[in-house]
Picture 1: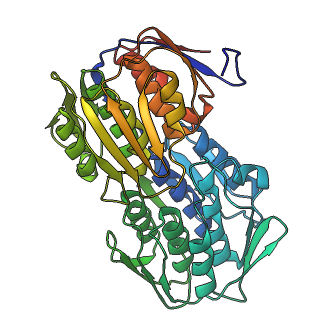
Picture 2: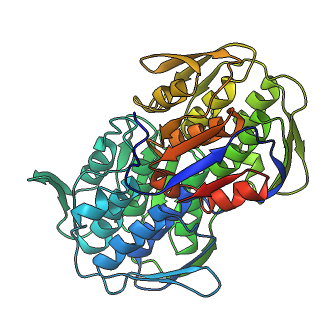
Length: 425
């Protein structure tokens, strides 16, 4: 890639940073987007505090508005949503293709209005991420599902009915979509092999606050007793474990000392275990607060990216960046998505020694990294090159940082607060 300026914003980062200070974590992207979709299940207000100010939330808000919902950012930062005015049940193609979570309007629209239509979901190109588990779940509850041109169409005659649904794999978005549909179905629905991620649990708690009857939350078998209607509710979006993890990795990678505040510490055990094994000190500082510091050398570690409670796939790329600075050979196995390796080519431009073989990567370190002209090819690959830029010699220019905007709120501001020299233009 040459140094020609690509379209969109870019970061220019000065290397050699050692992160110091405190950083506050924003609301969880994946929890917020599902909660926004849940607003379509009722004609009363849903008020969500701590929704992150990221482009994925903005694009989903546009989509909900386009089908007739009312979406408002209030003066206190909370988001108020009302689905009472929904009259259109076909999600606009251009908005669905921007954001994979947008496909989760299908379940609420189908359950409440008996019809939903959408093109296949978009988002990062990190694997096939088939939507069969969504559609099979809808069919099991009595919907007719088909393809009309590029769009998937689901419709039912009357209410959906309860069913026992087995998911081929524990899809987070699939579990959330089917769970929302089941809340208004007639009778009992059992979701077997459900995803157990904290964001799924948070959605279930919100739905219960809206009047749903969901049990088994946190387990791989969810029981849903359908109700006639749901009502409004107020909830606070949980902190983002991926953002917290990214800053924890940055602290360890740069040999820094960072206190991470408002973090979901109790759902991040897999990351804490691997960072300790790599040589970082993880110190709990009360509820929702953790200090990450490293004074010695980083050590190579092996890990697998797995469904929760395993190490989150969204932390695969940031951890790979850290391991370029660790002594020895580290082996990474990706068990969730089949194209999570987009970061490899960009880190190689900076001098990293990484070999990718299918869904695995071998990282040799420590290798000196040098400033280069790189791209943020997806949200988490962008985080990886940002982390690499922090420890590189010289200046790194990161193009296509709109990907980072999708998942990280005020990333540049937060990094500057920890002592990083960077600019955005």
